[in-house]
Image (cartoon, rainbow, N blue to C red; front, side, top):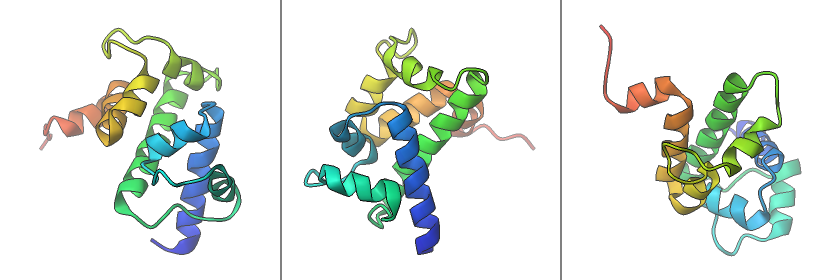
Length: 130
């Protein structure tokens, strides 16, 4: 992925995580960043530096972007619902979506996205239309 695209992906992802009001350590967990990642590195990600060039981090950032898009579709008139939805206990998940994101690693991101986006869930099921 070209550097410019990586920087744009990073800035967009950080903006979403900020809008969800995640603490730095929560951002680190959701993105799968190394434990040694410091708060000042997160600030650089917000402005000019791309995430490390690792496939796992890029996949997680993509899931974050897709979750945010699904939340905008689900709550088109209330841009603040995303952070609220993440913190309310969800009937089918059995806990808050945020706890699924923080405790489930990449699988947690997939689980939350599948809950929000039925087309993603359909693709996961292996169903294909001819």
